Length: 124
Ligand SMILES: [Zn+2]
View 1 (tube, rainbow, N blue to C red):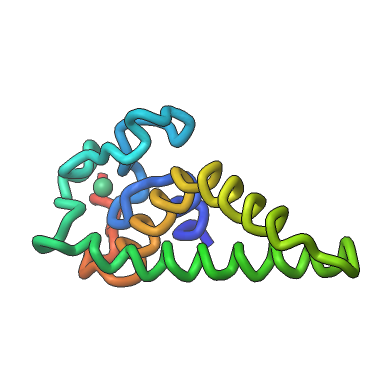
View 2: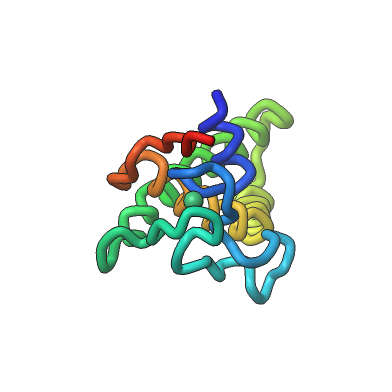
């Protein structure tokens, strides 16, 4: 359960203490800036060159899910769905949530696919 909380908080997958991103998701100019290494334990986040290309699959799945959910919402809301309203809603929703999607995709990629060792607390 603590891995899920650390993922949501954007913390390092190895030590679950250091932040992965340098700025908040609400900072629209710098939301994608990451630390190269964990500020707490020093693990390198990009475990190999091009590692984060795989995050696009998570982003794609998120986009498809949001298209389906918005379509379902429109279908339930009205019998006569206006295609223009649907397309505009999808575009606006995708743009508004893109920083969150970007960050969550990278974090999921790190938590699921990266070969980080399971963190062991140092003995005091
Ligand atoms: Zn760390």
